[in-house]
Length: 247
Image (tube, rainbow, N blue to C red; front, side):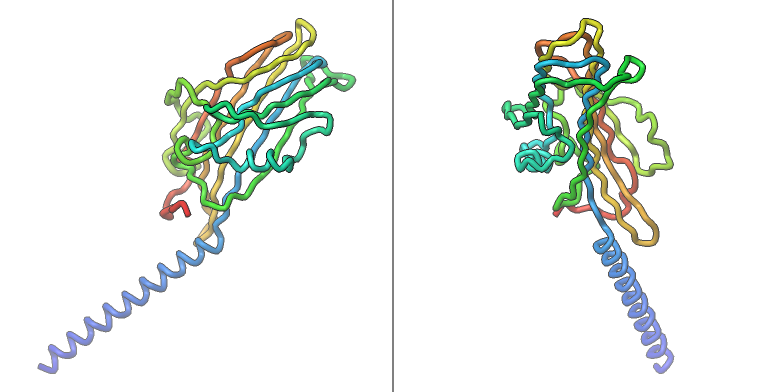
């Protein structure tokens, strides 16, 4: 009987130690993740030209989720987007299918030395810290993208090797931009916009995951209407070892 009691007591102590150790490990992992996790959006809009542009009006898509929410829209509405020149008139325009940034520029002059080989670029960029963890696995459903998204098609994830972790998923799509301006017949104008959402944390070592999407269009000479922008979307990049719950 004493032997049975000793065995039972030993098993109980072992189970108790394992339970305490597991709880301590789980608590450490949870605390380390919660205290170190950070999320950031990075947004860029760039207009590149090799020739001066006159009387410019652009309607550029602004990244937003399916419900129309976007930290960039909030920043633009509050006139807090850094990098917009004082001479530009920038307002938001809602189409029902997506939000556009209307930009009017009386004159976009280029500095001396600008050429096709050395074009002039004006870039607006900002980093934003969202209140919620970013859904980098399914951004089309829950995170800001350039809308409307048309002709979505899966493609090979070039540039996202095994070193990035995760199981990257990539796609191409098209969306629309309106551009109206006068310039030289041989002018070359490129308009590009991109957004990246990234989550990072550290438990035993730094880890992160992210998604990125970008749209671009190359225009020649004058333009007076809608143009098609080519888009790319890459998601599920990085580590997903920690279960992510969107707060």
